[in-house]
Image (cartoon, rainbow, N blue to C red; front, side, top):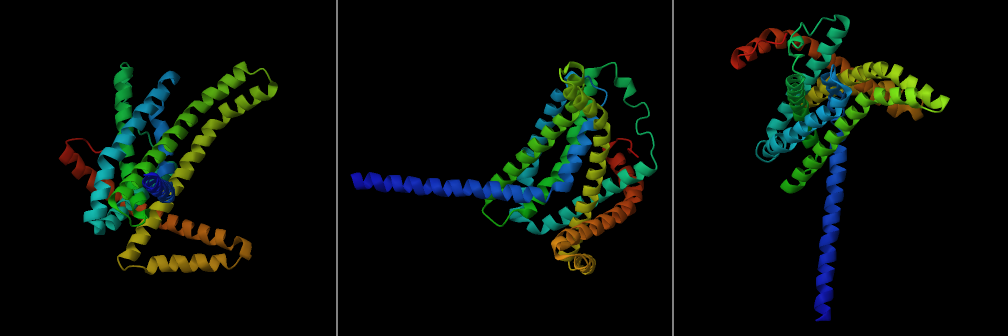
Length: 324
């Protein structure tokens, strides 16, 4: 009897070890796969704060929470099942879908660059009429942010899926879920910190007992607008880099690898022009820069296609006026 009990305990211990190893594998896979989605993640964090503009400070965190819940639903209830179906029944579709998503990132990035050099008023009174009904405006803004999040989340989840090693269905599902939730927490936690940082700085400046505290508070208040601009620039650069690299990699998989090979050769040559200690950094930076330049050129080429062809067709189908 004692031997049987020991054998049972040994089996339980073995199962626990396997379970623990599986959890480690899920966490490691989620972390590695999430890193590939960096560009879309940074853009997600950079885009969201604009939806909070014009609201009272006390409503900022509730709105962020509302958007975050919508993001979780997007990822777990819609995108995760679709991604798993693709992975298990139509894996050949993943690369083309990634390329479409990458092209979309390039388009968005190029459009932001265009607007930076040719700014125009994007709000011609469309939201001013709603200001008398803050609750309705809040719902409208949150819904718009969740729609934008859906597009970015679709790209993020597809990138994550492409980075998950071949495994069984449940391991892929768990890895996608962990990565999706982790990214959502990271993005909207960061957004919450960003949008409240000026309030923290103001409180430090107004109520701080020490001169250093008040000085730090003043720096926070004055520095946040510049930080937001920097975040937008970084997000745009990341979109162009990631979008361009996704499209180039997809072209290689489809047999059109000449551009990727040329970029690799140029980056390799640049890396070998500097001391060995800096070789890897220079090679990576050169490749990322060239991928980003390609992304900018592709995105610029897609702007007239999107605004003059796709937007009017979508407007006719959906019954809504094109945004551009």
